[in-house]
Amino acid sequence: MNIIMLGAPGAGKGTQAAVLSEHFGIPTISTGNMIREALKNGTEMGLKAKSFMDEGKLVPDEVVIGIVKERLSEDDCKKGFILDGFPRTIPQAEALDDMGVDIQYVININISDERIINRMSGRRVCENCGRPYHIVNLKPKKEGVCDDCNGTLVQRKDDHPDTVLARLKVYHTETEPLVGYYKKQGKLVDVEGQDSVDDTTAAVLKVIEA
Ligand code: AMP
Image (cartoon, rainbow, N blue to C red; front, side):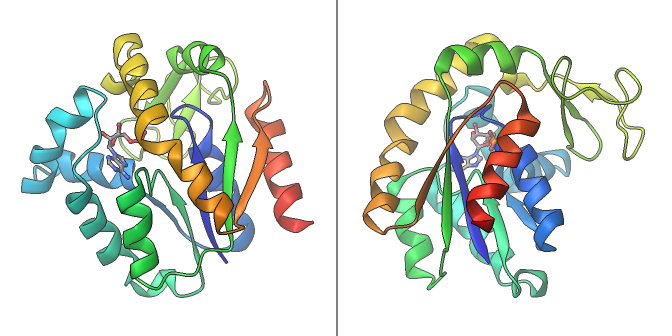
């Protein structure tokens, strides 16, 4: 099963993707996490991406398409995968089609900008493994510490309020047109974002298993 998680930044896609990954036993491919990892390792691609990322802008299509193409060719993707944060532009979606990738579901999480802004201010991630948390909705067992690896939980630079507004603007202009793109292909499944991330995740599983 190949699934795309669509929706604005902060819609809870990462959390839903993690649950679906576990449920179906297939990997999540998160371009955001891959770029952050490259940055941490000081690779050329990571350094090139940094300025775009810090300003809430999209990294150029050819860079992201290249890393996704390489990742999807790895063995663990043969049984299927969840794409989280890719595609984010029409050219990226076209590139995915050109790769001959057969997508079954595009899950579109609907959520208002206001709710996203409120939610993102409370978002934290593990600086070691990237697992997402929220200070109200998705608390770790011990405050400020990752349940999985004991890493420190931090607020990402791109989750700061100004950057969030910039990312939402980019989402509406660059990514939202994908809703129409995948609707036309008959793959779009709309899910209403709920107050609780767990409720949204349950709604996602329900549509996929229906
Ligand atoms: P995310 O964690 O998915 O919100 O991604 C964080 C940042 O990484 C984005 O704001 C972009 O700068 C960059 N990024 C991640 N995925 C993509 C993509 N598919 N296309 C372009 N830039 C991306």
